[in-house]
Every structure is written in structure tokens, then in C-alpha cells.
Length: 394
Image 1 (tube, helix red, strand yellow):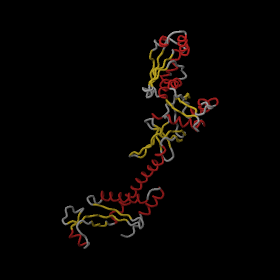
Image 2: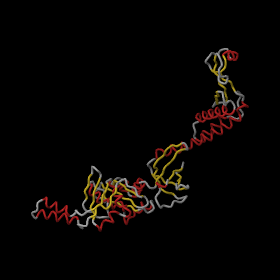
Image 3: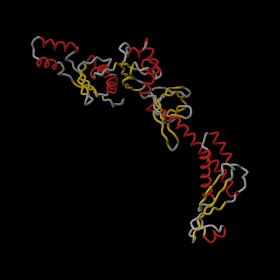
Image 4: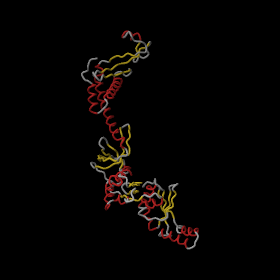
């Protein structure tokens, strides 16, 4: 076949280079597209093959028929007798190719080329987005807010593509405005039939963890370790910290001079309140710290069941529970323990009670009676609030 006026190979090569697409893959996609289009529109019952020479640009559309002794399907087969007239060297089982006149496929070829390029470029752009962000899951990026939809989803521009912030991953009450730049946690990147979906979050605990590392040098260099985070986005969070250097106060390091460090963190989160507490290897002390600012009494912990019963006096009860149960709920998430708060009116000072019990023992009472006296201090306690690590804010 003579060199065509329109060189498809050159055109595809230019597009491949401009769009960073593999040239041979693009040519193969074009051949398949043209074969399907020609079969569908011109020769629906015949077997069609297309070949494009990447060097010369020569384009061939071929009808392929198998050589048989007796023809059962004239669209797919040719008799041996007829085949021998065309080529004396053919044998049964071989295939013969019959070129199609250029006039019969020129228009279809142009349409197929356009369709192939459009589809391939779309696929390539999707792959570029997926490949760029698939290994960045778990990172925090700065994105530009671009738009929202009627389902309450916000979309942010990352550079090569868009990420979605569904309502559950937004900070409740935060007002996003197109054009604003915000930090987002890249939660998931996955392929779908419509292209890659990038899920972003402003509510994830790991965004808070990142901000702490950004604003607090001692956290960034590992002197102060963030042991646990419990967060109810937009309202309040609790962060448990521990210092690997006895000369460094972990809470003071996180709060900063006049609160400047923690304020920089909360400023990125819509002024969400962040409580910094001291982590402790002792379960009871950790639970006690987690329930601050409330001052609680006796703590009975069952580590194997991840449950703890905490006695609270009436004057500390509301602080321990928190607004809407938030304080005890966050403490449960932070410690990983189910916490059962029990109110008692029998004692107002736990330390004084313990001292009294010890004094009674020293005064001659046996240990059993001292313990009985101590236990009696809490005999009127009753459960008033329970929170589990998996509890969600209603």
C-alpha cells in the first residue's frame, strides 16, 4: 500500500511525546480501536486486523480468512481451491490476509484515531494522578479549596488532581472557602472505573500528630514522644506525651511560652481545644491524668479486660464527665480503657482516707479491719457514666 497522505504514526508519536505516553502502547490502542470501529461499521461478521508501521506510517486494514477444505462460514473461511488460485503455496489451516481499499476506512480511521487519543490521554492523566499520590498515603499536604457539591463534599486541588473531603472527614463547623489553602491528611488513594479517588481528611488524629511535629521541635526530634491522641474534630482533643529527657518537661514543651506553640496547632484546626496530658506507664496514673482537669479518687483497673472503675466525688463529677460526656469519652479513647465513673458522697479527699486507714492499722487494728474501714468509705458509690474507646460522639 502506498504512503498515506495523513501519517498516523507521526501524529501518534507527537502526541505520545507531548503527553508522556508510551508510543507503542498508543499505536496498539489505535490499531485495536480502528479494527473494532471497522468491524462494527463496515464488516460486522468478518475478522479484521489493523497494522500501522511506526516507521513508514503505512496503515493497513486486513480481512483475515482461514484456509479450509470445505467452507462453513464464508466470512471467516476460504476454500483451499480458491486460496490456491491466489497463492499456490497455501495449505489447509493457514490464514490469508486481504487488504481493504483505503477509501473504505479512511474516514473511520480518523474517527478511531480521535477516539483513541481522547481515551488514552484520559487514561494517562488518571494514571499520572494515581501514580503520583498512591505512595503518599499517610502524608499531610497543603491543598487549595476549589468547590463543593450538593452532598456536602468539598474538593481540594493538590496539583495534579483533586481530593475529596466528605462530611465525615471535615472539621464540624469549619467554613471552607474556595481559594483558601488548608492542610489535609491524605487518607486513601484508590483506583475506580471513573479514575483515581483521593480521600482527604481534616478530622483525622494523624493531622494533629503532624501539626505537633511541625510546631514543637522537641516532638520533631523525638525528645518528647506523642504516645496517644484522642480527637473529636473541631471541639476538643487530648494528647498524651512523654519525655525521654528528664530535663525536658513534655507538657511545657508542647504548650510553649504563653501557649504560643499549642495555639499555632489549634490555629490550623479552627481553634479546636487541645489538652496536653502526661503519659504514664502505670495504668491507673495514666487514666487519672487522662480524666483531667477532674480530680478523681480510687481507680480499679482490669488491664486484661481493658476496663477501669473510677470513683469521683460530686464536686468533680461534672468535670470528669465533661460536656455531653466528652471528657470521659476522650479519656477512654486516649487510654484504650472502658471507663466507668462511680459517684460517691462518702469521701471528699482520697489521700486523707488512705492516711486514716493506715493510721487505724498503726493504732492496733488488724489489716482486715483497716481494709474494711477503707472499703466502707466507697460503699455508697454508684455508676453515673461509662465510656468506651470505640464510643463516637452523637
